[in-house]
Length: 350
Image 1 (cartoon, rainbow, N blue to C red):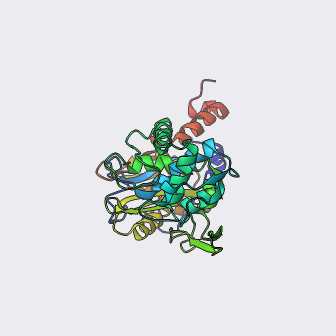
Image 2 (cartoon, rainbow, N blue to C red; image 1 turned 45 degrees about the vertical axis):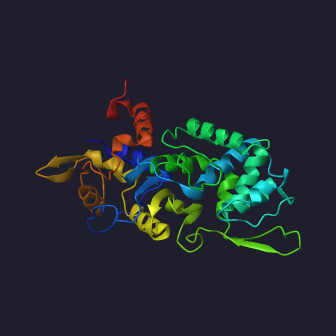
């Protein structure tokens, strides 16, 4: 049992963390995650710091051009945006997606980052790696692996800065969630990832170069603000997604997909029908009686809120999974706050 004053304080504390502002008028049970074509995927609620659901999340797969997110992070750690870089001939010989760089051209680090993240130019990635690596791309790749280790990406290995298929170049959906969340600390990456169309520096002949973002969900699907696509013969289609709607930020990762845009849309739509942190916090205040959820007498909720919480299903372990309330770091913080603020109510020491 929890008094109404404590309930009000919990509500007030959870409000800015993002979740459902109002409860539906009919009973609602979270649907299981959709069936998608991806070999591996993850849906992470960054606002609540909880993994909502996963599939083969720890299986290693090629990651293709989403590699370039880590490339950008290492570049930003070690170079200035206005540094001027001369494009080496070795970079222009790269296979796959190209930004059309010409050997001997001079580009700023910022423009090269745009060419790499928006157009997914392999030539731009190699130019940046060559520059930051002091003329040695392998030295830059070593920096990438060191940074990945710092982030705790223990099931990832990088063999190049652009994501071309290689036996020693792989990651997992779980590690790519970690990478995506880490990229949120880089405002430049987030700003560039939102660019839909941009005109790049003209080529040596004076011809204009306009590029479109390879992420076709950007600007066409509600709330999508990033992050990076990938597509190679062995990796198939890969997409790191960031979606912001209201106060909830959702991270989606799909790997080995036949259609990374459709798969991501399915997962995004599902994620916003799931329970938020507020629901997860209140659910333990129900007691199971006769198979149904009964609200503690002193917990003041509307009838629709009671129906919603009562409909929350139990979650079984399996190939896909969802996190329990105890997995929420923010929930633990809230508990400690309540113990200090309301010791006699929630079992504090005073």
